[in-house]
Image (cartoon, rainbow, N blue to C red; front, side, top):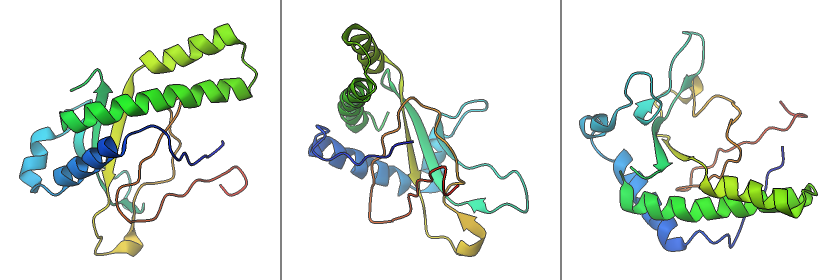
Length: 168
C-alpha cells in the first residue's frame, strides 16, 4: 500500500469548507434529529454507530453517517459540489497510478473513465469525547475495500494511522 498526501489537488476550498461545516452541523444536532437519518436494516447508508460484537473488545467510539453520493441524494448542496470535485480528483489519481504502472494509453483511458463514471460513497465519522478512553478506540484497524480511498480531515483531532505490512 502506498500512502500519499495530495496538496493543490483541485478540490475547491469552498467545497471542502461547506462540506466540513455541514458534516459538523449534522453531528452537532440533537440525537433525535440525527435518528431521522438512521441506517435502515440491511443497509450501511445513513446515521449510526459501530457494532459491538464482544464484551471483551475495545469499543469503537464514533458516530457515522454514510451516504452514497453518486448519484446524488441529502447534506446535498455541499455534498454534491464536494463529491464532484473528489470524483475528478480520484480519476486523475487513478490515471497517474496507471501511468506509473506502465498501462498503455487506450487501457489507461478506459481505467480513468471507469473511475470517473463509477459509484462513489462518502463516509463521515465523528469522534466525540469519550469518558473512558482506555476502553474505546475510534475505529478498529481495518482495510478499505474501495478501489481508492481519499480522506479529508475535519478539525484538529489527530489519529489516522496507516499500517504497512512491516508494522501490522
